[in-house]
Length: 240
Ligand code: UDP
Image 1 (cartoon, rainbow, N blue to C red):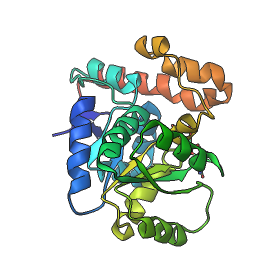
Image 2 (image 1 turned 120 degrees about the vertical axis):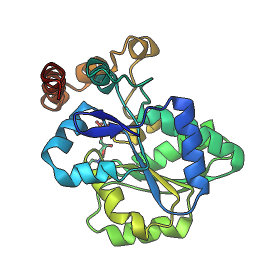
Image 3 (image 1 turned 135 degrees about the vertical axis):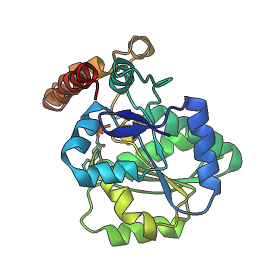
Image 4 (image 1 turned 30 degrees about the vertical axis):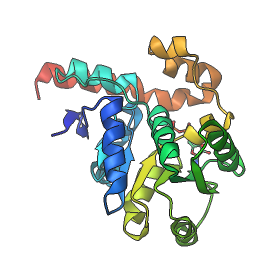
């Protein structure tokens, strides 16, 4: 059973459990997908039923950031740990490299996915970069065909939220890929175009502040975080 945080059900898994489940999904038939919602996406799910359905249709819903962890704790149903999407996918690719499996990188500005692929292949020898495509295309059909032709074991869908969640839900039936993961700006991180917060900031759960300082234009989007916390506190007080 999933842990409800303002109407979005999260899987209470540790990083290691999430990786083991992902490997099992990759080995099983059917196109499964993983989503990694943060408070901003939880708030979007409350307003947009199509996004909520896409998130609910995922085979794993991982708590991406500290906001969701705090929210769950305030609501009295704590989740064990945050499982950041970019870390999860990187650790999964590390395991895939040992088996010689392939990953297709979809998303980000032209050139970024290729660069991410080069860096990942150098870091994890044995990992097959099945293919890459930027995230600024008009029609899904040719992109789906290109992905299917390369037979990857994993597809990283990095189109930003909630576009990537809707894309995976819409296209899963025609994708011959056992597992997909919606990962926002992760390709920018793997390519080195965007830097993750230093480890000390991550340990202090201040990654969101680092991102805000580096990209002040995110302030508008981040205003969803106080709104999320107010809703959580309101729900806790009303006991609903
Ligand atoms: N993006 C894309 N296609 C689009 C819109 C966005 O490929 O139509 C990419 C964008 O270039 C960036 C990522 O999606 O690489 C979104 O990054 P952001 O940091 O905003 O995502 P978050 O992790 O916060 O969801």
